[in-house]
Length: 446
Image (cartoon, rainbow, N blue to C red; front, top):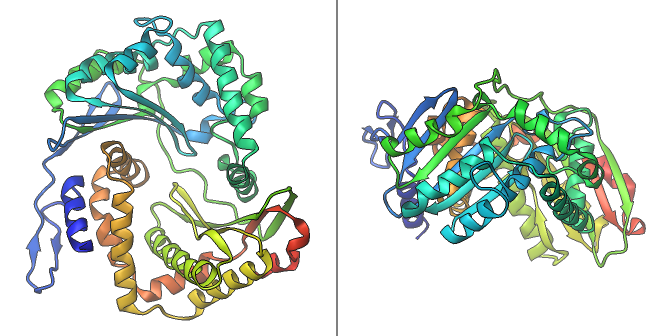
C-alpha cells in the first residue's frame, strides 16, 4: 500500500530526474527517467520565475518568496516585512481601502503571509478561472500598497494581538526561546514575525521606506504550480511585478550555525506539564551531510516515540526535529510530567545512534516511510512550490528537488552513525515548567 501511495505522490508531484541520470531498478536493468518537461524557468526583469504546469486539477498556487528572511532585519525592525505585507491587504493603488480584501473574498482566493528565517512567503491559491483577477490584486499588494495610516494602525493591533497570544502559549514560546539561545549572534536569532516591542515601534515611515528599498525583483523568486502555461503567466508577471526596480540583491547562504557549547535556560511556569526543547548546530543545506542528518533525526524520533511514549507513556508529544533551513539544526523536544526520566531515555537513545549501526533493512523501510510521510505533508500545489523553491534557493537549481528521494535512499547505516557523532552534541536547552522536576546536571550530558 505504501508503494502505491508513494508512486501516486511521485506522479502528482512530478518528482523526476533528468533523462541523463540512470537509475537502478529492482531487476538490475539500467533505465533512464524521462526529462521533466512540465517545469520551466524564465526571467522577467530580474525576477526569477519557476512554473510547474499541473493539469490534474484547476487549482493554481503562486508563491512569491521575498529572499533574505531575518538577514533583512535588525533588532529594532523584527517583523517589518510581515507587517508590511499584512498591511497591504487594506488598500493598494488599484484596489483602495477594502477592495483588495473583499475582491479576494469574492473570488474565493486564499492569500498567505508566512515570515521565516530564509524568506517571507507571500502566496495565493485560486482556481484557473479566477487566476487573472486574483493575480491583479495579489501583484498590486506587492507593487503599490497605499499604507494608509489608519489601516496600518488597525493591522498593527491585529498583529500585536496575535504575537501576544503566542507569547502566552508554551510551544511557540519555547520554540522562540530555543532559536534565540541556539543562534546567539546569528540572524536566525531574530524573530521574523517580530515581537510586541518591535511591532509597536515600527513607524509608517519605516514601512514605506522598507517597501521602497526592498521590493526589488532581484530579491524575488516566484514559483507557480497549477494549470497555467508560460504564454499566459509571463505577460501577467511582466506588466505587474516586472515593473518593479531590479535592484542588486543576490542570494547567498547565511553564516553557518555558531558552535557555542552546551547550555540550558530554565524558565518557571505554572503548567500541567513541562516543555523541553534543545537544539544543536547542523550542516549547511549544500553539505552532503544534510540529508543524512535528516534521516538520522527521523530514526531518533521513531526511537523516542517507541521508548518514551509507547512503552512508558511519559508523554503525548515527543520528537527529534530537523529544522529544514539553509543553515540546519537538529534537536530534541518533549512535553512531559517526568522530565528527569525522559531526558535520561533521550540521552540513551542518542548514544545508541552514535555507537550502534542501524539495521540496513530497517533503515530502508524507515526511509521509504519517511518519503511517503514527507510527500503526504507536502501534497498541495503550494507545498510543491515551496519544495521547488528550497531546491532553487538552497541548491541553486530547482532540478535538485528531483534528486531528493535518491539522496535519502543513498544514506547508509554508517552515515547515520557518523552524523549522529558529528552533530548530536553541545545541545542548548530551554525548559519551561516546574524547575523542581528536573535535575540541571542532566542537560550537561548532551
